[in-house]
Image (cartoon, rainbow, N blue to C red; front, side, top):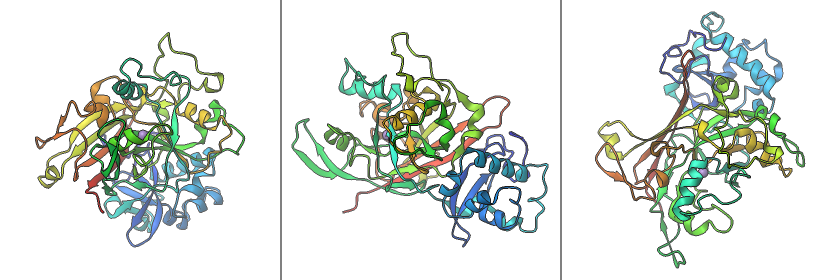
Amino acid sequence: MDGGMSWVEGANEPAGDFPLANLPMGVVAGEGRGVRIGIRIGAFIVDCRALAESGMLARLDRTISDSLCGSSLNQFMALGRTAWQAARGEFMRLLSAECSELSDHPLRKSIMLPEWGMSVQVPCEIGDYTDFYASIHHATNVGSMFRPDNPLLPNWKHIPIGYHGRSSSIVATGTPIVRPRGQTVAQDEGPPAFGPTKLLDYEMEVGALIGTGNRIGQSVPVDQALDRVFGLVLLNDWSARDVQKWEYQPLGPFVAKNFASTLSGWVVSIDALKPYRVPLPPRLSTDPQPLPYLQGMDDTLFDVNLEVLVSSAAMRAAAMPATRISIGNYRDMYWSIAQLIAHHTSGGCNLRTGDLLASGTVSGPTEESRGCLLERTWRGTKPIRLGDGTERKFLHDGDEVMMRAWCERPGLPRIGFGECRGVIMPTTS
Ligand code: MN
């Protein structure tokens, strides 16, 4: 059934993000009907509650259709892969060009909502948020700025490095981001001053949302890890580099990261991404073997193109297109999703439905594939020119960062993630 045609307007456009093969899920508000779970297809959003109430999900178990009637995806996510696949099969059937049950239904207009009238929310209640550092290109680039002779610390190729982030400040795409304040230093030893960050950056990341968790004290074997992932989203891990530099030792990022992270709205399922699953990049002959609990399932990365665009307020006022700053691919990561989960739980930590595990900045081997400005402008030493002729070392007030991602391969329908965007607002007092 994957890759077929749909009767929904916009679903069969070759350059679109949301064909029948994708069917990402999210949470939307608008049309005077409160917050609803939605499925994105073409230019429309299926209101899941309206669909369930119409009786057209009667082929699904009641627990599944009931879980789609709430205002967050968590209940549905907790049901597990068999339920997700059953629901996906029914959505595909109802939306395919061969089926007229929904397309000819008298309630169709109240079930299929035009996407332009709806606002996209954070797709689930996020419990805990962990951010990794799993790109060897990112870790090597950043490390070499501070330790030119020894960019990767001795643990890096043995442990997927990460830190526990903050879920309360995760916001939906489109939410304005206020420039944070913090302590910064002119010299490495201080003394610090307090004020708005001068080195505001984005980080292009891929987030995995956990569907089914594990009990405390029980680790998740690497070969069972991917089955627990409900789907992937884009994440912009906004970062204040000058604040980060002063505060990060010895316990890692804190105020430099916790002011905001932006999520894209549509969760692309692992089933939709299956045709784009790829093995880990080849290791060097000198690279160490990971320990046994991190071995196997080396094919849990995905071939996802990742693009970052920036526009100034002046560019948007003049209706100029945004400037592409980078184009990379998620397949360039050193550690796979399964390895991140196996390591996260290896000490007995329980993951829960709605937890978010982010990849860390995705950078590739080329300059244009570097996923943050710190790397892309090499700490500001190589500024980038925007379409309006102005230069950027780091982000200015009024700048909008837009991230997009998509998978494409000859013979397969292109599937996309939609957008992850945010505009920088001046610091407030
Ligand atoms: Mn990050």
